[in-house]
Length: 586
Image (cartoon, rainbow, N blue to C red):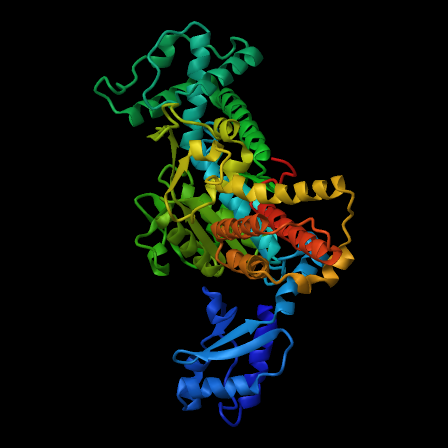
C-alpha cells in the first residue's frame, strides 16, 4: 500500500512540474511514512515542507496544491493537511482488508521483495577461534547473523553465509599444546599445568581421544618437556612467555609433523562440535573457510603482491609494513614480521580480497564489539588493493550477560569457566534462545534472563507470539468439532464485515509487515521484527478476546477465519526469519 500511495504522490508532483514546481526537480524522496497514531491517518508525508522553498510557497499552500493534484483512488478514504504542512492519508476499509487477500495469495512469500536486486552479499559471522566450545556470547552472534542473512534474502539479496576458521596462529598453538599436556598427564606425567593453557574439561576429552589414536607414541618425559623453561605464573614468571616456551619445546620434541598431528586432531574435534552445535541451533553455513588455506592457495601472497605493485608497502626493522595511514588508518601495519611470518592482518586483508575476487558486492562482517580498529584497517587494505572500501560493512555485536535467578553467570574460555551455547539451548530451548538473542539491537548490551525465557506466560514474548499462532490452529480444530468447514472464498468475499475496532487494528498491523521487512533488512535490524511480531500478537489476542470467531452467520464466520489465518501466516513468516518455530499447539 505504501508503494501505491507513493505512486499517487509522484503523479501529483509530476503534474505540478513546470507550474508550481521547477521542471527539473528530482522526485526521488517523497517522505512517506507510517504514522505513529492512526488518528493522523495511516500514512503521512512531509514532502510539502521539504519542497516549499523550491516552490516559493508556504508549506501548507503547497500541500493544498499537491492534494488537489492527487489522482482519485478507491484505496483512500480521505486526505488531510495537518500542522505546518503534513499530508495525511487515511486508507479506505476495503484497502485495509485487501492485505488479507494478499497474504492468502502469497503465503510464505508475503513480505518478501526484490529491493536487494539480487546483489551478492557475503555474511561472515560467529567465526570464533576454534579453541573451545561455543559459549552464550557466540550464540548471540549466531542468532543475529543468521537472522540478518534471512532478512537480506527476504529483501532479494543473493546471500552467502560463511564461517571464517582461525585455524592458524598462536591461539591454535596454545590449544594444541594444552591437549598434548593433558595427553602427557594421561601417560603418567606429573607437572603444573600452564597458567595460560586451556583449562576446560573438553581439553581432557580431546587428549583422551589422542591417546586412543596415537597410543604413547607422543609421550615424552617431564624433564625433557619442562627442563630449563622460564618460570610461569604465579611463580614469578610471565604466563605469555612461559606458554610460548612450552609451545617451542613441544615443536622441538614432536617435530613439525607430530605437532601438526596434535593440532589437527584438536581442531577437528572442536570444529565438529561447533558445526554440530550451530546446526542444531538452526545456523547453517554455505562454507567453512580455513585461514590456513589463504597461505596454501597463495591468497596472502597475491594480496601482498598487489600492495607491492602499488608501492603501498615498505621495509623497516627487517619487517614489511603496509602504508595504512595513507588510507585513513591511525598507524601503519606490519604484514610480514622480521622472522618472515605473515601477520594476522595480512591474512585478514587477503581474505577480504578473496571475497571480492569471488564476486561479492558487499562484504558484511559481524564482529565482536572490540573490533573498531579492525574495520578501519581492513578498509584501508581494500582501498590499497584497488577495491572499494565501502564494500565492507561491519556490525559490532555487544556482549551478552546471562542471569539465573537474578545472579550473573561468569564466563572465561581460557579458565574453562563458561556456560556453553549447548547448555543454554538444553535449558531454555532453541526457540527462546534464538528469539531472546535478537530482542535488542546488536549494538546494545544484552541481559539474557533464563527464568523469563523458560516461563510459559504472556511476559515471555516468544511464548506470547507462538501462542497467537497456536490459537488459530485451535480455532480450526474447534471449527471441525462443531461440524463447520472453512470456506475461504466466502471469507475473502466478505471482508467488508470486518469493521470492529479490534479488526481494524489487526488489519493495520498486517499491512505494516512488508514495510517492516524492508526496513529491518535495510537496517540489519532483526530486533525490529521482534517488536513487530509482539505488536501483531497483541493485536490478535486483543481481537480474539473481544470477538467470537465461530458464529452462525457464514459470511462473518469465514471472514473472521480468513483474517485469523492471515495473522497466523504472517506470524509464521516472521518467526521463520528469526529461526523460531511456529507450533500448532502449546
